[in-house]
Amino acid sequence: MTLGTNSSIKFNAKSFTDVYGNERFRVGVSTMPAIIPQGFQYVTGANYVEAPTNWSEYIYDLSAYDGQEVYIAIRCVSDNAFVFMLDNFSIHSDGGSVSNEDIVAPAFANALKGNYPNPFNPETTIRYSVREASDVSIEIYNLKGQLVNRLVNEHKAAGEHSVVWKGTDMNNRPVASGVYFYKMNTGKFSATKKMIMMK
Image 1 (cartoon, helix red, strand yellow):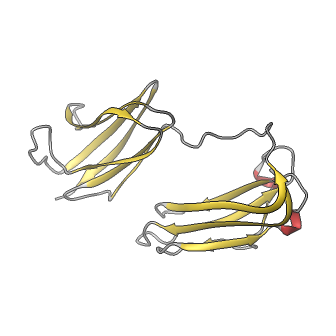
Image 2 (cartoon, one colour):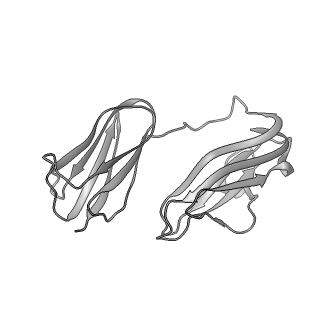
Image 3 (cartoon, rainbow, N blue to C red):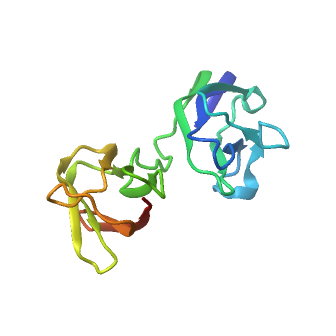
């Protein structure tokens, strides 16, 4: 986007949990015509910012880039941590514009995300996102490749979704401890991840 004057960036952020350590991030701005990591200058300073487990508001001054065409990025560093969460992201600028020629990433992507907790007992939440409204299935398989349960089998709107597996089979009977796989299918997209039930 092209900034006007008195520019700033504002968003809320938090770490999902601090069990594995808080998430860390930096906010970068680049004026280069191509997006490359080396092109970003960090307005958060030389060190990473550590996000606590409660929602916190962050505001950074972008006035040094007033009147310029910029790319803005939030870089998360997750060394053995878990989930970095963002909300209410906005850029404030008097005037300025967003170029119609900018390559804009879709708001959502087809993705199967990590389940939490993992390992788990007796239940875990599986998060996933859908790029556009489509039929989605989420299925659980055991190590032998046998279908254990079908958690989702319906049309879903574009966006973020989650489903809870209570550690049961299709007849609502508890399953044994061990390794299980959860698989997502939507359109041509398919992804599988591993989880562990420990009793």
